[in-house]
Image (cartoon, rainbow, N blue to C red; front, side):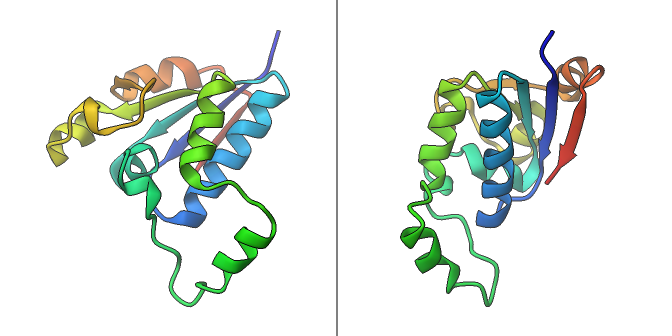
Length: 131
């Protein structure tokens, strides 16, 4: 029986995105079942346009060069890798309603659901993380 990793992504910065997708893809690549619940600013991580230009923390702009030198994939590529590895990505229905966002503005392959949808997965997760 594989382990389960449940992640809540509620922040929308570049560093947050790398934390979320590094852990999610590493877990999925080691045959763990992974679900990410995107809420509030975290929805930017799976937004087709916003995830191409996530904000770098102030004063950390020098990291951009380091990411390039280390051949770190861009966030849209990380999202695609997560999808290919079977990571379940759930957009928060309530947050989408509050922000007036439709499923079509997000990357293909996401689910839309409420907190209950995520809790059903996370209820017996081996690891639960929040970013």
